[in-house]
Image 1 (tube, rainbow, N blue to C red):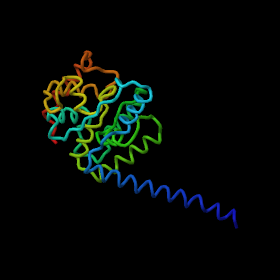
Image 2: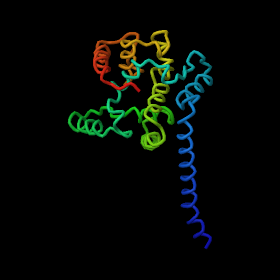
Image 3: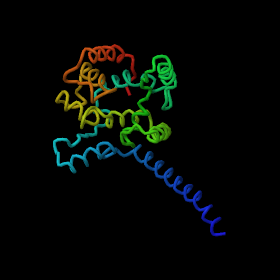
Image 4: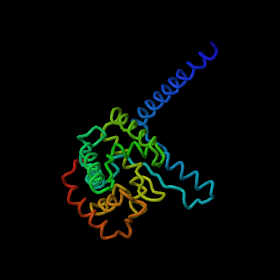
Length: 230
């Protein structure tokens, strides 16, 4: 009898744990629909590392700006570069996923297929990692934010929490670092150049852009005028 009780306790405990986690994540996402996050997991981690290692010069910079305080050029540039079907999909762009799969089969090369919603879920709720469980969590949070948040809120969160280089999180910190101005004052050319490095902000440079980055900047500028202003 005792063994049977123990046998049935574990499934019940697991179920309770899953229900608690589900409730917490629902509350978390719903609350952040109205409250701006004071910090992101990656910013908190980088800050802790800088304190532990006594390296104040490496403390991350994170400054929140409301959407109307961010240049419309940057808003259009990000959609043009990162997710042109942002307004029409519900978190996952299956056209891009299909292209990524075909590229992997044909060229043995994996290309990104993450939408702005997926990247937002990643930067707001999760630490950087390539673990399969993190990817599953990213998919889960993407579904939730598409349910609870408007596209306006998702883009606003993205612009404020995306990794824009070592120790630089969000549009305001990036604009200050790369152009010594506020994110609201970025020109069309500056917005496109800043956006051009987003696929790999730790490798590519805004201040010393390569010919490839200049090419990306030109492509983004050509597409920007066709993008919606959110």
